[in-house]
Length: 503
Image (cartoon, rainbow, N blue to C red; front, side, top):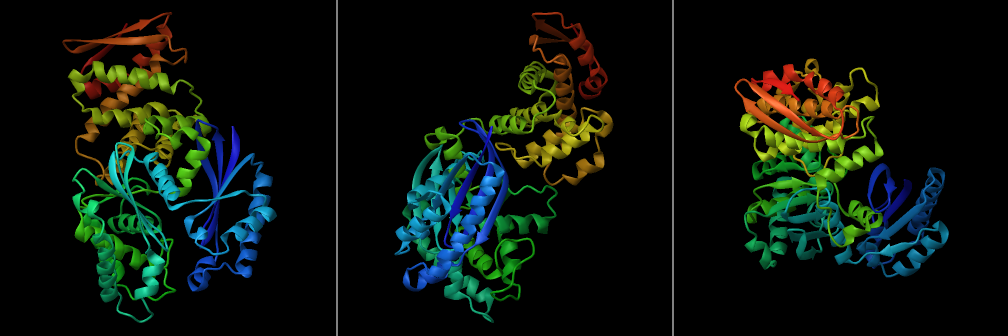
């Protein structure tokens, strides 16, 4: 394991990301610093980056160099966005930065930026077909993909900064101006013939500050119980509710909405752009992505195979990553999941649960013991919190919540019905019955590998009257494991209304 750093140089800020990494396998970001720059304003005037701004960038990069050295960073990758490339003196600017800081910068093309955004999204969201919409201050990128292949890529030379500068002035009627911005941006989209033929199964994935603020304001307005930005889903009504609330506010260029990362004028411009999609295209569901270009560049740097193809099992990858960097006292979580899967299939005639429940079952099997990292007493309560606050990809918010409750329910006394009710807008009525059945499966599976030797290779379940006979197929004496699993008999009977016998 080593420490790596990624530096992203844009015209409005420079960002440092620090991560622990196992090269060609996985990484976890543990620190991020973003410092503002004022390059963009002068570029619009004459196309040159001024000496004062070069000095400002050098100061920040020197600080980043000191941080990397003090952190013991062993590998560094640095890149400049396409906007920097537009500067007439970009070559001399980059050369001076490299000479002073020691960071070697690569200037990305628009296609490379789009590819990095796609990589960041496809390796953190399980959305098979989508149009990615990435909005920044100066441009909008559209990337259509299907089955992990990019189909279309477009760049529109308007972003939140350019639109707000064009149409918004202090004291202007923001509601009227937002309508003008929506209509203006809709005209930019009208020339993209492929957008008009988007099929219903394609979703829209939003990336960037506008969508982060949109999702946060939506969750706040709905009193959404889960503080997770990535994979938050919105329909057109949700979007229009936030847009309506923002454009009705009194604001000026200095106004900043609480909890958002952009000023109110740029947010209004961004939401006007999103509204153009809602009004003119089938944006039946918008998926918010919390990861974009910098994440994609990290994937390509640490796991070079993602340059060619995305990670195939997102959920498995993220759970393995969590256990790699934050190891559980139990080292056998993969085998426990395999036993859970066997039991899930063998007991299907009783539980009658759909395949959808395999995802929360997998989350719980990998993370049921993660609370013991903090301490044994109350470990299931801690596991519940850890699951809810971990970076788990390839699972819906509903999956994550159910998985957290399964982990907590390894100790039946730690199940809190009042806490469960908090998530009523995320969960379905049938999920409570499923939770009890899945929790019993995880508890039995963890008992069957209590010694962590993976002696039990298979399980055969026979339903005989009011009993379920579980026959273990093993290569050693597993009397201790059977004894541990039998401790779940009470929970099993309550969930399945059957007695449990283990052989």
